[in-house]
Length: 238
Ligand code: DC
Image 1 (cartoon, protein in one colour):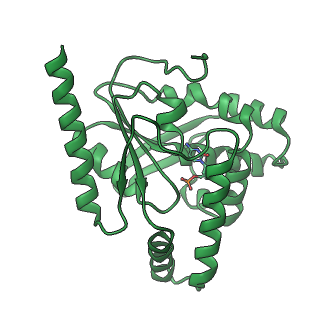
Image 2 (spheres, protein in one colour; image 1 turned 135 degrees about the horizontal axis):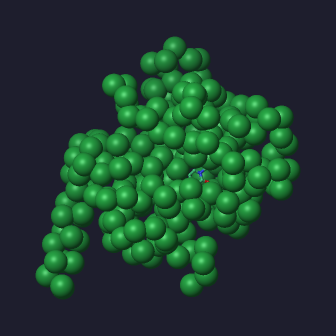
């Protein structure tokens, strides 16, 4: 195993929740972390923060050397507040800009660069702390925390994910076309699955949960049941 794929840090347990955009990872991860009393890593926010800092620094999406340097000096923090977790860049909250279209596009471009991904490994692994960590992303179980005892891959059909996104945007008062969302999602899925570095695929030891016909609570219950079941069998082994 190369240094890059070996998980470092202490031996606090990690639950990885990977999957494509719109499968509900964010909401499920937040609920499960709260129920377990564990820390939470939103790795998508890490890539978005790099993208935002890059936009502000006027960097090009293909300037890998400059982006790596930026990752190495990234001052990123997550602060728990009343409205949930807030992302701080150099001490300032950046939540709204983090979700803008400009930053989303830049994030998917920088996330495709192998040296940027390597430069962010230690930063992500430092979130592993007692009593445990829920890590939400695309490659948490396959690259960043390969030795995690609990791994979930959350899926949902493209139709269902496009539907959820459509409703969300409508509620926010944005005018969107369903077909456009559907096609964008399909295209992004293909790019994520087929990219050379850290493609969005389930780890061999991940449990795949299809949330197409499940509500949030049902998915949360299934994930918690998996943690209980696997932690029970670990205790029996030792
Ligand atoms: O989950 P999200 O939409 O916030 O992720 C933002 C971008 O970062 C998206 O293009 C996928 C990418 N990403 C990644 O490549 N690896 C991760 N572990 C998390 C996100």
